[in-house]
Image: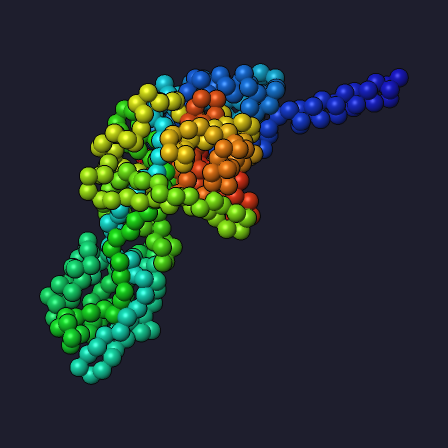
Length: 406
């Protein structure tokens, strides 16, 4: 009898284990960041939609903790199995929610670099013949030269002035490479044709690009766009921004995406009266600044709440774009949503399912980066990359990461 009861108990436990395993997103819970910003609506969605499984409930509570010898109150979000077995607890800030204007239109970006970008080496015509000043020096394409003798470089024209004031003596170059400072000593050469001292470097101090506006914060007019950085077209490095401007773009054509061949939005922007705002940040999660002229950028009647990454789930969603000439919502599917403990511009995998958008672009094309993604009426992310093997698919970034950088 005891053996029979034991077998029955074992079968029940096994069945219960299988049921829980099939209905609880354990990996997703473990992958959640240790800190997050949520709204009460987010918590409601987690519970009502069973985002982390049918048997998982979420709730907030306050705890007194000791930080540096001082007592502080922290808000915790707890996930429990069957409402009483703790699974995961994270620190949260509960906000009333952020409302933003939805983007979806192409923008032109004109950037002034912080320092100058090294794009190659050059020779100098001296009175003793052609010289290669930086030969055997550890300088490479993509380095950012931002100081000479501790003088900050703000534009290319400063370089010959600094070298001349130094009478062509040995100069200390401070370069930035992979977020690390490198100091190199170089003796400049006098170019006889220009009568100026030169380092023997090709450098650039500006960059430009085209991408899509994601949002404008309705409270302070801070905008976010692209979802990934503007990179230098020759070196591929993330352009360090000193300052910049955004401009309204005109869409003049579309090259449809094909397998192995990404398409693109062909856009034109003219500097001057089309000026719409500033650029102060270019980072892994997009381009940011202040929108100073909202006319033509957003529809003030089209504002939505921002959705937490914890509430993004596989399923139907909308992509906002103006590739047709007017701002429209297109059907997409979120195939995968990763609950990342660290920020990444590849938070989601999406697929375009709308026949209208497929007919226009073939899927996701260059220039659509930053296109807003809505789910359950909330802004949850932005398009970032297209799959070369399948232009109907691509990556997207959670809007959480973008807002943190904005």
